[in-house]
Amino acid sequence: MRFVDEFRQPGLISKTADEIRRLAGTERHYRMMEVCGGHTHAIYRFGLKDILPENIELIHGPGCPVCVLPMGRIDDGLAIARQPGVIFAAFGDMMRVPGTQGSPLEHKARGMDVRIVYSPSDALKLARLNPDKHVMFFAIGFETTAPSTALTMIRAQAEGIRNFSVFCNHVTIIPAIRAILDSPDMRLDAFIGPGHVSTVIGCRPYEWIAHNEHKPIVVSGFEPLDMLQSIVMLLRQLKAGEAKVENQYKRVVPWEGNRAALRAMAEVFQLRPYFEWRGLGFISQSALRINDKYAEFDAEQRFVVPGIRVTDPKAAQCGEVLKGVLKPHQCKLFGRECTPEHPVGALMVSTEGSCAAYHSYEHRKAAMVTLTA
Amino acid sequence: MCLAIPGKIVEISSENQDSALVEVIGVRRRIDLGLLQDDKPAAGDWVLVHVGFAMSKISEQDAADQMNTLRMLREIDGAMQEVQGYGLEDREIDASRLDYKEPIQ
Image 1: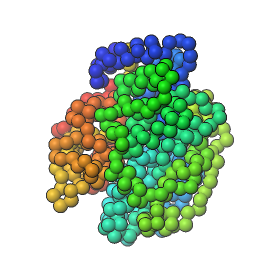
Image 2: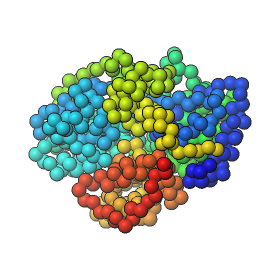
Image 3: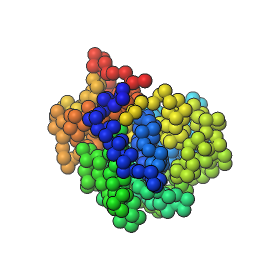
Image 4: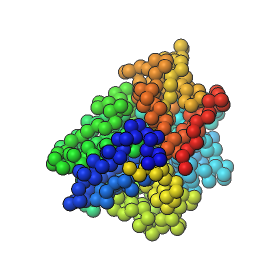
């Protein structure tokens, strides 16, 4: 009980865990997918699996943007950056992601001008500071980060900046959930919905999951109590034979989302007809490209992009892990060829990737917060 | 990148209403308020910041809870690094305010 009192309403954590046990009973098995990589990290970190009854299985979803990016896109971005006078700018999360000829960080060691930025607006600032260079921002992320990239391009156009472009890899969460539900080897009972993506898109876009697929979904916060309460809400729906969208994270997520952020995205982006996801393959209308109005900032239009497609190493089973068919440790490379120090697959790179989370916490139980309820 | 970092708005720029100075555990950084233009925050309000942009207004209690969650997830260092990174060169750090609790082992 040592750490329970570090959180909001500590007494409620053990009560909520008791309620989960009561509702879950012992008769059937429940498979719930947490869509967001932030939830995956928190589930391992807080050892939530240890306080859940055995018949509740949490399946880790596709919501880690670094993890679902195909290796060919990294190669394409690096190919642009090899052209003279180009600065490659990306979030720190991208720096150790392997391309076929090494990660951005390894390219930096070989002399490429690679800069870590913490905000797309800082990439734009780099462009202002380096008028004789071209700054290409390698944009990744779901709807949480896409509005910031969009607003940065709106600002760049208003300012008339010429030496800035975006290599756009933004993806959208709804088609990924649809692809997972369409996958024949995937059987899920319910979803723990992403928290921060939902601050932007709101809760309405999930309604088809409830109405058409008859699966409950609860948008959840990231604290242990948030996730436990979300599981209670899902179990109550399942027990009652209901399928609704509910919002556990009301203190941050408005039902309608953030309209200003959605407007910024609509101003700059359009849907790609299809996009490749690592582990999930090609998914139609699942990613964003820059529209004609902002074509001057589209790195894919300004530069020659090789359009490289790379198949993942055969032995790596990232796809199966990403779809929740395999647990991370069931992959042949896990913990041997593929470790957080030397990642083969992207799920091992980011702290939000299920393999890295599993490796850090499941392998070293000492690193976990003990949340015995 | 996916971190949601709570910050308190210290001051909104007089020349640019979309630019604000926020404070996150003693670090002051300039962020963009452009994505909150339908529900503009004022000085003293708390916001959740993603990659240098305020994404939602939150209460002071929620800000404290979110900070606690980041600490428990051992992401305080990452959050600090990220916030210090905003704005590239113009740092403004008050070292005396950096005495946050160590991550729990």
